[in-house]
Length: 164
Image (cartoon, rainbow, N blue to C red):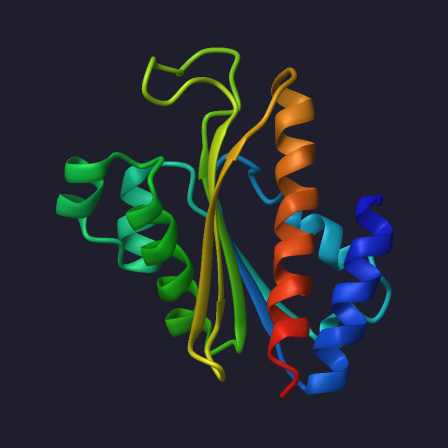
């Protein structure tokens, strides 16, 4: 499925539930927010996006503890979860998504090779957090695009699991 279709479906699901959404993005650099706001009328269900590319931005804008980043690394489950919780807390939104990863071509390591992405979705009303590790293939652009697709689908899945 393409980003436009997924973003439309997610927007419809958000609007039907009266929920506003926020994003906290590192490796996608605002790509999820861009996909959402490409949809006309998205102001009815999309509130804001945080592009927190640096560790300092993750701390300053989302309240991610610097010790957490130092202990687990920016590309980790713990940081993705802290990012999404921070985005929802800062915005007051009912749904948030966060991504942090290694899009390449450099920056990878044996433990976290290029294509490693942590994605976290959080529904505040259901108090449900879904966090997953993605292992993506391709060049930088392909990895970023795949991450956006996975993020939109994960949000849609989380909403569909929690109908209210």
